[in-house]
Structure formats: structure tokens, C-alpha cells
Image 1 (tube, rainbow, N blue to C red):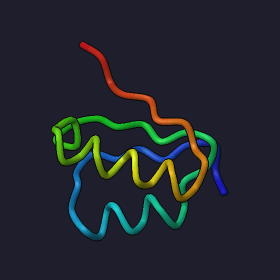
Image 2: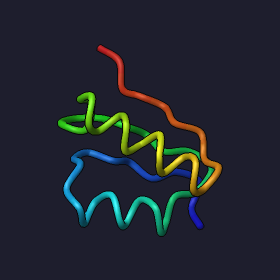
Image 3: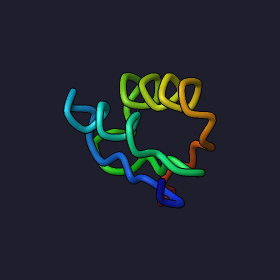
Image 4: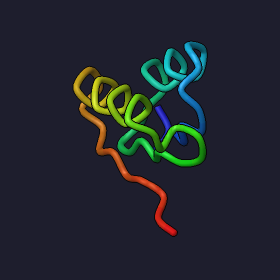
Length: 57
């Protein structure tokens, strides 16, 4: 398990990979910064115990 996984989109493949390989942090960026993407990030964090961090502008 690496220290972080960057979720750039909320495609089923990206979400599945994030849930499988998420390390200590899940960085949410790009097109994943939507209501749906953030909800999926919350679910991944709940399953893995990782901390969610989002990109800022």
C-alpha cells in the first residue's frame, strides 16, 4: 500500500482501483471534485480508513 492514491475521475475502474490500493491518503482532484466524486471518496475512506484530501485552487 502506497502513501496516497490520487482520484482524478469517478469512473468505475478508478473507484475500484482507489478502494483496492488506497494508502494513508486519498487525494481527490480534477473531474472527481463533484458531488458524486466526493460521495464516492467518502465511501472509499469508510472502507479503507484513509484520509481524504481535495485539490484547492
